[in-house]
Image 1 (cartoon, rainbow, N blue to C red):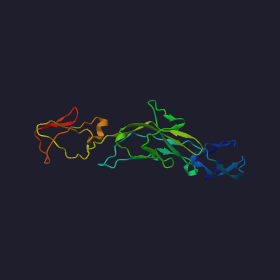
Image 2 (spheres, rainbow, N blue to C red; image 1 turned 60 degrees about the vertical axis):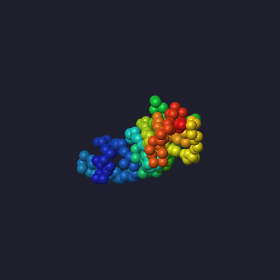
Image 3 (tube, rainbow, N blue to C red; image 1 turned 60 degrees about the horizontal axis):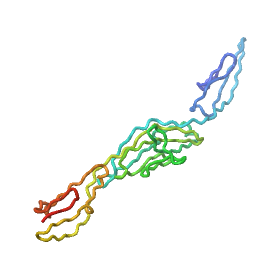
Length: 238
């Protein structure tokens, strides 16, 4: 029989064979005491130290949900800060194992899009390989949806992959931009025409936004005799 204090995972049969399967939590030294009794009541005991060695386990990655954030503009401070280490567990960390993090774009089949042998990632995003922090500041040009996967590798080279997840950057309406317009001269009785296209821009035209121009005086009142030709964005009048 086994003495008090012997680990729960080990057992002994009537032939004296010790057996059992230790888990990660059992790694280390443990004392095992065995009692032997004969048919006449004689007994003896023996003690040994059993050393359970660690065997490296691959990291595990839990499900990463899709996320959405707004583009960064003057009205907000939107930025991506996703700590991917929260989705990773490694039973061997306490024994000195170290995990490194990589994130890459994936195609419609969930396969990494490679540049040679390297993972690819949109330039506005970056991953800290040590901490697992995925970060970036998305601007107007980055409005889109990005399909990604996380790959983690431990010190022994064992890898684990996450599910494919998306980071979606949504558009935030930006006000149109007007450049300085110098004073203009018009001649009575002659057609006045002035091209406005180079003075007004809208950052959101890439997502379908359109500009509507109108003519007003300094107090915002409509100006008689002047109109906008929208097909060419000219002020015209006599």
